[in-house]
Image (cartoon, rainbow over all chains, first blue to last red; front, side):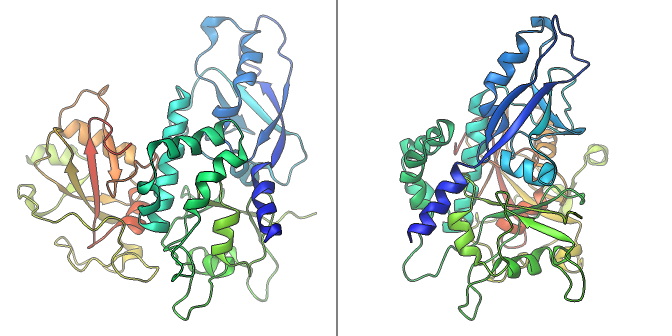
Length: 275
Length: 142
């Protein structure tokens, strides 16, 4: 079981080397140097980029600065998606560092939610945690917790404190001894090629015959096009936290060990790179 | 109300007047044990075919606290409509000012993201063939 706990740490401490560059049409008083930062995979862009904002605001006039937003190769990056998900989905098979363009004008209202303060990020994060527990435990575990426990989850994430976070989060990963797992698995499957923002459905970790459902079973049920046809070539990569878990992995295990802090498994389906 | 209904992006169910006398669903319980969408056995609206191909889902809106109650509570909503779209619609219907806040809750426990699609929420949290959403002008369940 030591190995399993290591996975929790590996997930928590995953980082993506990123280069932030100011959009060329932004008005500056001096040339803007790029800003390099290791982004935590498990966090959110607007939570960890205060230094980026300060860096670029130094070369701009106050009146030219409105809400910051980020873009990668023309695609506005949704701050309310975890960073690791955004990277896996859009840039995992490109060379590092991840080049992100910073904007302070022309906020794309249709593509992005506003993020006026850290409170908004906290509210979004907690809503996801609550939604996940509604699926896992009919909200019983999250509702039994005190407000200070909820706060501790958020503070742990915000301050990058693994132990502080997991002291509370471990309770959200428990299930009654008579069951083999959660009621339903909180997951979202993302694909850039489809119209839908993501796929999320009810899926039990255990089949009616008592066998543990696997990642392959999940994909077959909710996203069969992602799975390689038996006679064909592997078309897609199924990625979580930058790796491709084996399709035989039980989803219950994935949910307990490779969920993001919001307790969701965010899974990217991306085209298989042709080396 | 006919001219108002034409402008609205949602379509009301059964004429729009009646009180819904429905019991709130058991928190978090999806009808049926399978992984498919909840059955619409009780749906009064249409005889549309299989859940997956049904473009609209049934939503029941419930007011919380002293938030004004909508005369029409049951609506047929496109699966792809977002929570933000629903918020805008309710605000217009209740004649709230745009700057007033409106919070929407699922299962009386969490507030979904504004860009969440109601179809996905129905799949995961619907019961008795409909998605019950509570709305409130102030934060009710955090």
